[in-house]
Image 1 (spheres, chains in turn red, cyan):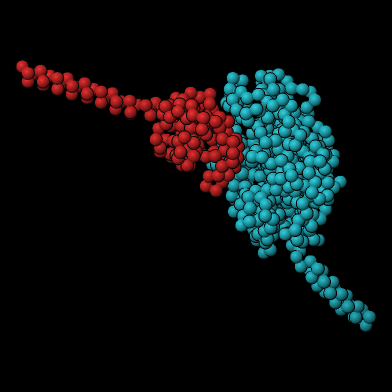
Image 2 (tube, rainbow over the protein chains, first blue to last red):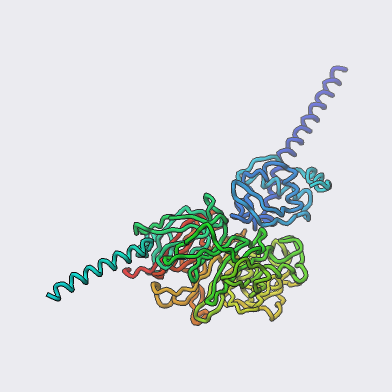
Length: 144
Length: 432
């Protein structure tokens, strides 16, 4: 009897554990796709007019988002650019880009995370997903 | 006997005169006869016109001017090997021009020739260089600085220059914002009250062509309420200044409740203004609506896309589609092109970016027939195909973008491109 109970507990434990694992996997697999799809819509609404459909930007004016350190590097800097805008001339691959970008702090943490995750995984880019929690922390912090 | 001596003497005299003339003009260049490339340099042109590439890979070639003997000066936006003005000639007359010399240590856009001087601009200053009888710069290292201290921030900072026939020089000082908002290009950000930047930008300033070190206090704000101008020219028929404005951007991204993306792509018109002293074209308070054909109150100043602006502001003389970025204007006074082109206006449209997600527009040279300073017909595309594409979705796809215009002494039209640094020469092919 003891053996049966033990076996039952083990089986239940195994089953519930594996169920949980499936759930976790689902979340991991689903979230980015969802985020990227939402990010694409947000990009079309807020970004495309300047950064263009191919993420290539505009010579001398609006910087490209393709394989640049600004997009792929320091995530805090990237999140801050969306929240606060960028009002200085920057140089990418020897070209300068001068147009100011207005801050988009009216976007929610989730929206900022979605659109940044989208640009970090589109236009030939491949980088980690940005989470709403990361955006929340940076939005709350006073440091630039 | 007398006749026999006169003829050799006459020949000897001719030889001596000829030798001394060629010695005096040892730098003199002859205009290369126009000959189109087999593919017209990739351009689409009206019947009878042809084009050839006279130079390539020069850098960011902006404005251009041709001397009376067919030599070329080009201003580079960014210096190449430390030099910002190129001087080109075609010594072997093969139709391709070679860089003879390069000088000046600043990047910029404007370059022009008037009354024995070459004038060139950086983003903050204007210089002039004395020319010899062949219109070659005598002392490239020591120009006279005639204008200094002009406002140049990170938008619309380039200076275009033009001279009239009374020793005045006109300089565009572009406004450093889109629409004078509290938060430039920001969401529903209101316009600054009284738009203070109009004191020192957003207009055309007039200075003396022959006075050194002038700045705002020495100049005259000739016209105001003009967001940014790159193309400007003097019409010699009515002795008047004409300018091409780069119209405002971002109607949708700043005001999504009032304008959808399609409206934002198609409004406002790129406007050509005939400018009289004291005129106000109304930026940032109004924009010229492509469809309503009126100055409409800007949303930054209480507009809703319908309310008309104040009547004090002038109207354009020609309205082109939105955002095409007119980078040069030239009234044609040559004799090579057919009669209908004479006194008409050519406009180099650099090509849009602010129409995304709609497809982009421009990337061509347009023509408007004119008579006595007034348009005498609709505008039309004159030279197309610079981009190398059927349609441009994003500006960086374009292989070439027209930026500068100049008329050669034979009446051919030169067009610069600031992507690859190509120079095109467009001519009318009399033999075809």
